[in-house]
Amino acid sequence: MLDLEAVTKRYGDFTAVRELDLEVPRGKIFGFLGPNGAGKTTTIRMVSGVLLPSSGRIWVGGDDLAEYPERAKSRIGYIPDRPYLYEKLTGAEFLRFVAGLWGKDGAESEARAQRLMELFNLDQWSNELVESYSHGMRQKLLISSALIHQPELIVVDEPMVGLDPKAARILKDLFRTYVRNGGSVFLSSHTLEVVEVLCDLLAIIHEGRVIARGTMEELREQAEAGQVGLEEIFLKVTGGDEVAEVVANLQDGEY
Image (cartoon, rainbow, N blue to C red; front, top):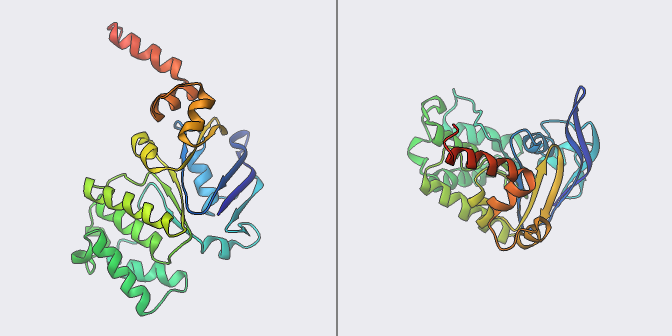
């Protein structure tokens, strides 16, 4: 569903992402992890077409993102970590606007928008201006807008930010149903407990490079970590010794 081949992104002399190779199969939830500044959000923005890579190629559903951008992007539903919305539109108008961008006007899209707003308990607010929405409501509306055109791939950065427990559970179940029906999810999050339970495959990026990838069992083998959880694996491959030292200092009262 998604292929990255030797993807690199430079900002002047700084290289944010280095020679990145990734493959996201259809029907899977793929977790993309890393410390702050590792290159996760840069990668997600390149995959979604917001940023152009400095070199390398990206394919979405077999379409080269650089050669066929509209066709490739139409396969993607992008959920960024911050809900940027048009505040002078109502919730219903915003979903209608996004559906129209993808050529999905008409009764079917209107019905889908209504179902999505009902799913996230936004239906009573559908005719209220977005400027009156709370942060959590905006996040729910943003998620709905990413699903309105029935994409094949959901690209999501920190999906649970601002969501209450009920909405977070709905979203997790929605992702599982989505992949059972043949869709794919490319997900970045710092909430490792959610990622461990939700994702079929994972990759950990550090300083712009993938340093571990595979299933949970394969990550354990690569990290030589035994039967531990994702948090321990993550800390070990990205600098867990430093964390252990800080914790030890805290316990000794040095701070």
